[in-house]
Image (cartoon, rainbow, N blue to C red; front, side):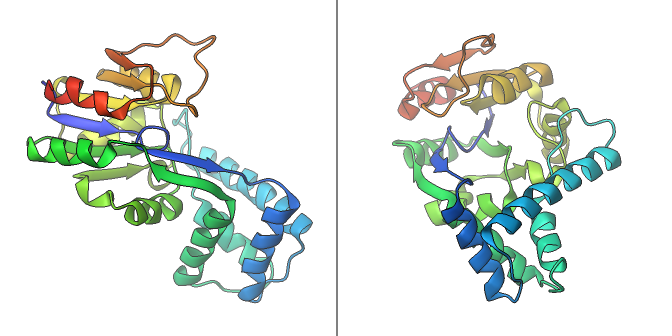
Length: 244
């Protein structure tokens, strides 16, 4: 039986829908920046955001040349956008900007049915619970706190902190090293056949796949995993992790 349960977040524990397109969204982002003294039009801030994100991607690739799957930290992009307008943004301003940016783009944010019971059951059984998520900490941690699940994790690994992301073996190995985990006692639970399941396979651990509406389409991809749940029922995960 597995001792270390490593979870993906979005599409596995949290159902989410976001949209960072359209004039309405970028007008809201421009208003956020204006409130702190940085004047942008919706069109200009959209253009500069994508330009600076590409620049940050090039810089991250340069500083981590051995990483095959990199992840940037969007907080740097938010800070650059202020700097272009002569505003020296504090860490508090950046955090507030990130939260408001995410809120403006979010159309749905909710836990899948059965998530709290699953996490509580794992903790009661003495299991270690970890998060390995391709995400931005400035978005993800506040959302975990909002939904009340951050307290269940023994370790939280978010790709924006590590400059790499799933399916990179480097990202998995960083988690194993940080918490001294045995791969033979670990399993990855996720909804993506590539980043989660192919990543787990490459890292040498078992995978439990759960298919959700927002999962990457399986067509054209080999699903490599030890266990699978194809109807999105989170309650069925307990059977594989606890034998229930």
